[in-house]
Length: 127
Length: 285
Figure 1 (cartoon, rainbow over the protein chains, first blue to last red):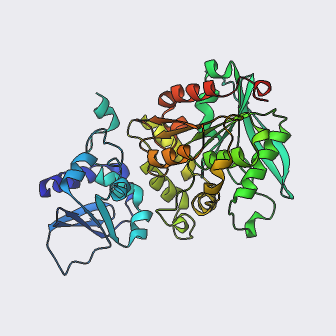
Figure 2 (cartoon, rainbow over the protein chains, first blue to last red):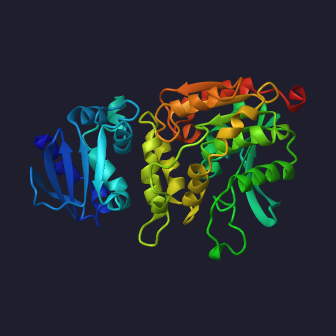
Figure 3 (spheres, rainbow over the protein chains, first blue to last red):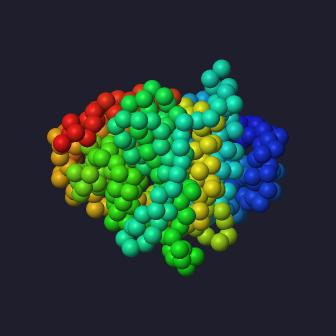
């Protein structure tokens, strides 16, 4: 997962429209996958650090708690219903959102598109 | 270059004592089909079907922007008013527009909150319509989000609303139509999506009325997309099961805005629904 997140970091930082959407987003986000913690530090839309946990002293603004199998489904080119969106994972009981959800909602398009970066685009998926 | 056959005009109506200038579009001839948009959006959701020559050869599709939506202005004095849609106002609006346009027992086709009100009208005013196509429609869903997120001074409610409802769009939707669908939410007026959701997530009065619907007189066909997180196939199935004689179709590759997000995928389901409706108002009398 750490390598996957590093790949997402590189891809985010070379995606201009996400840089623009995230220009006011400078927060730390907790991603918990099968109990393994990763603290993602964003600065003005760039992911500047991916720090593996566990950590009891790293403050984070909001967290997404899920499992690896759910993320594998989420990252399929054409995910099954519910696995196509982070709120779908929540509805399926495969994810939880913790912390300041309003900050997530204010930056929802940015964060959703960041999380979906490993998913092949629609064009690639249909090729 | 091509000029589309859709014609847009305005009609003035009085709704519960309030004058409203309503924008409506139409295309086609024959059986009238009155189409209702979803929350936070407008008539543009129906443009693909209105541009479908095979459908409009025998059906006159009419869609209108609810007050506060699209090209229908809010009422005079809106600047001090909190927009909160109610079942009563919504019912009165649909009836007033149908009457003002002189529609003779149209088929009523509504999506999401439009589907909800179509079922309310099936229960409360069946004589005004010949049949009901309720898309992404169910008896009731409480909000799984805070509707106040979408109307606040420190953030853009439309952009947040669009980011939220993208959860209801199928990954099979063509990218261009996904974003056209989301654009309508992005560009809705301040507080409008919230005010629509107030109705959609707060009024459960339909539950007790479903048994009143007489499908022998006015057929009810419910269509639901598997990627709809808001009105799930389970929600639609429960609702259809509570209406004796109602029929249901599940679209495996579509979401909550099927006519807008994936027009080609939705078309056969809409054609099937139209085939279940009376040929004309006379035959349903």
